[in-house]
Length: 265
Image 1 (cartoon, rainbow, N blue to C red):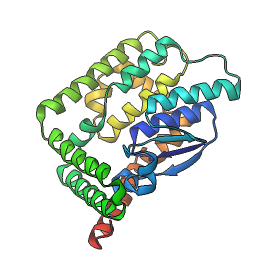
Image 2 (image 1 turned 45 degrees about the horizontal axis):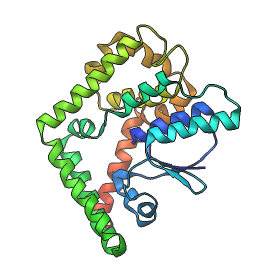
Image 3 (image 1 turned 120 degrees about the horizontal axis):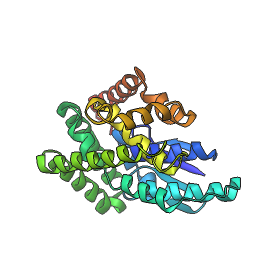
Image 4 (image 1 turned 45 degrees about the vertical axis):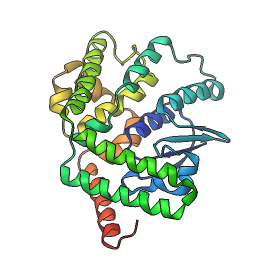
């Protein structure tokens, strides 16, 4: 089993947490979307959306995080003999979490200079790959248009506000739930938690913990609880706890700067 992912990818974090929690072995391939590695022809052939994560088990390839997590749960049932498949309540929470896309929210809280620099680099990568793989030119063109459309959305205050309100609604629902239960869908850790934790990690990464987490005491307590789980330390803490997130960012920005300087896309 292979997982194509990156530590920055919130959707990848959901899948990796599920794999770690279920104790399923897999081969890890880092594909950095900030440097355009997801636009390489080999990856693009496998997944024309160029989105992360991608999970492959033999000839079986799955793209969406929620679908991968469900597949992982079924694998755990067959491989580990677990007798507790995903319940309807857990599935309901997974769908609620999946319903909020972090893309516009994240980009709207990244400094303009950094966002535009990365966006420009990725567009140049797409154009370079288009020339290298003419058979994929039409799909690369769609990705190029998608990049421009995303920039327009980030500049639209109404769209940004909708994303913020949808996140606030999700967190308010979770706050009420956590007043009744220890975890997001009951008193045991489930796949819903594997999908919810990366949402909180993304908020923290953007230095918005005070606005979205600290003001919700049940979520704050829950977040402190799950940070002690081995899966969190492996998937998120290893890269983004404390000073580590600055190391991760600086390493990527340095790479982009060198590649841009020498026009190596």
